[in-house]
Length: 325
Image 1: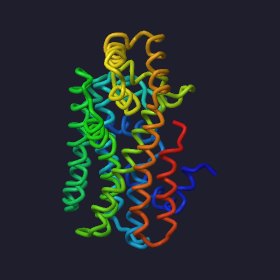
Image 2: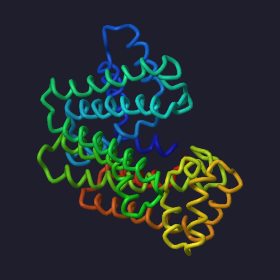
Image 3: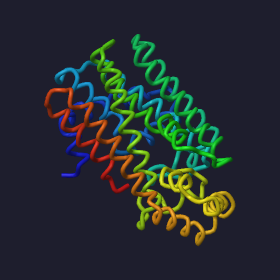
């Protein structure tokens, strides 16, 4: 059995029901809109976000969930899907998970409007049901994701990025959404409880480990998930590179910065940078940091009684680090 199926097993029924509710939450009286949202729904990925919501909700409540949990998962998916549709427009990207993106098939104007529509659907789903606490969690996440992206753009221009700034960028860009899923799962069943902050922290730690794993793919021999060296070509500062930059003697540091800034399209030069990062311990350092975040996340789960939901969350933490793409 695939590990994702194994993780999903204890919540298979909820996930199936969630899919039906999620499709309904997107409905509109406009035929074009329905056609596009139908296209989006049928090209879903692994659905990690709703899985986090349901597993956390069930773990902290001994298996009891309510309509609020389903709404919370739908709100996260609606608002996150809206940001992805907008991202594809911003990045001028024609593919998403191997399929054509909305902007590739229906052009930018329609894609932006679809994103706005999904965003408003998410907001109204919460407001109509007085789930203001859940709406606050997801709204903070969207704000932080935008700030993280902009902080990364600002820093990429100067390449003067410290490890502290890097962690802040990935916390906002990647970790904040997983943190929102986990805290929202807890809040949907145990409002105003300590579980909300515990699970937010748990999700954040997983998100940090997840992003470092993504950074490491860039240095892989095989083209997993994204082509090797693409982060360097896009002048994205990743943890292995930051570590090596901060350790390098002045002359080598200048060569590295010059390579990333001015020669990032030169395949031979990019390969030399990758080789330098590997030779000077960049990957080992990043792997150690990733494992530290993983262990801290697992530690937070120890406070909860044994259950199939807790086991699935533990599997999820391992999967984030062991995945091949």
